[in-house]
Amino acid sequence: MAATPESVYTGVANYVRRMAVLRPSKADELKEQQTSHLMNLLRQCTNFSHTDATTIFDHLESADAPWTPAQATRIQDVIVTLVSDTSSAATPTDSQKQTYVHLHHYFPAYLWATAASNDSIYNISRHVCSFFLDVLGLRNADEPTR
Image (cartoon, rainbow, N blue to C red):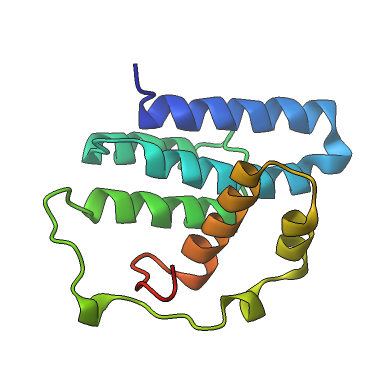
């Protein structure tokens, strides 16, 4: 059974709250990592409805939400994109495709460190793809960019 957007949000938020209590010195770093992780998990949810979005917005605005205002805004932006996307939308035409010729010039130090680590190729790819989506906004890459 696929996870619902609300259960994904609740699970990550509860984890962040618990870890902030257990390891307060790492709380800010953990929140940042888990913000990106939550956004990736929400993108994987199918059939993201307006009701799901409203419920998560309510959680984000609650007093016990573990996110900073900037992190909450990033999460909201992802949700708005997911609700606005329609599964019946046509694939982008060639004129709508995005081209980035020198992607490696945009990599920050943490991404190079991740790429050089002994981590799994899946995890490295996940970090790189998150960077492409969240920072560069690369959603419809053309063939040379892929």
